[in-house]
Length: 183
Image 1 (cartoon, rainbow, N blue to C red):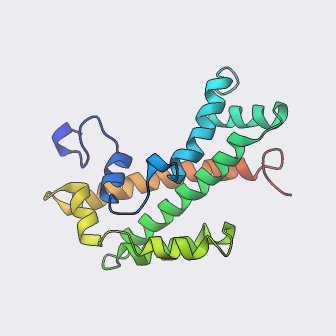
Image 2 (image 1 turned 135 degrees about the vertical axis):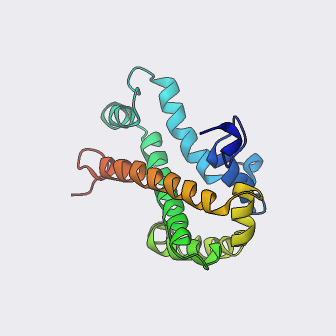
């Protein structure tokens, strides 16, 4: 795909564009409350401290579980996968319902993913955050500018499908009995 056809800036990623599209959502990474940053940092720390044992995500987590006392990266990966699943579900819901606002899609995804893992104190905070999502028309416009919105939807659908595949692989890994599985 030619650079000018991409729905995100050269040298950037779709996640950079997604972050820009959600710029009005009240998350302050400088105060260390950016959830994805904290959870992914736990995995990066393991990869830095044990690069030979962490050539893949799965090998690093397996190494941590078998040899280290603290299971920081395992916990970080578990929450990162939950967050990515939430994101994938919300975007898939929104792509499947052409007139639905993002806030509705994200609320539906929250009920089907993260809500079961949150305490009574956290649930209302997430509920309020769902109201801070951008309007659908603004979100899709920021992803693709004034360009072809059908192309944006098609490329976003491809990206979400790839995310769903990766989340599925990691969920299956985490569910294994020798990893974090309970059975």
